[in-house]
Image: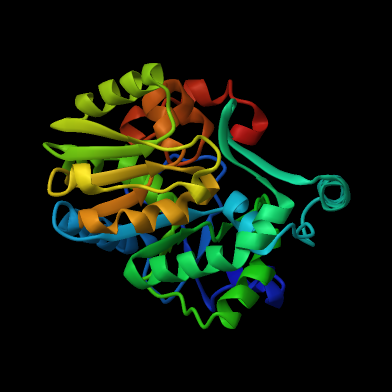
Length: 321
């Protein structure tokens, strides 16, 4: 039985899938073992091509990379009923949650980490800017890559969005290719895995984030340990980045790489940084890893094989293994 046949046809975002393996991350937890793919290429080769493209752009070419998972899918597509497969108890629990959010909540609130907001918008605001959100994502796909969370496996996570996402792609005439789409976790792997040394060593880095000064200092220390030559900051709002405006003039010709932590409002930020003519990568949760390395154990693909400690994993809650 093919991997696609295990998903109902309306969940087939793309006609191909690939076993999900990333070099340097043999030991992973909570990651779907398959991912949708534009073709037959295996994910190890795909990751190498992705990495080479990013490295070739450092310091000399604009390359926006925007990660999209459940939070961004909710903003783009609205609440979706739970995936029709999986344990009955889990489906029932999520259906109750879905109906509650649909009927009684009036705001979208999400968090990257405890106390770290990734967005706070009223439902009315989201309805008003959803078309603009689509326009921004289409622009990013035309200039760089959408790092979509399209992996799936034994334990459902965000599959409920797949049917609506497929309709969104068709409606907007967006065909996902190796040029404009990459797996969500490739970004984490690049920023935390063995390839990070080539990315960071000697680079002038601009960080776009709403962190306070204490947190900024911890993040800076982590990046200097990775070998960056300088770190500068472009402050933005902590949970309303969709409305932020940025003047890039202070950093013209002064940075090699931009890393962004802007929550679900990120498409607005990524495109405004085009004048810097360097890669602009949505790093998201990796900012929290730089602020506190212990947090890397709480997301997949943040602990490379040479740092993986099996003894520690057994102490993690079941949903983090």
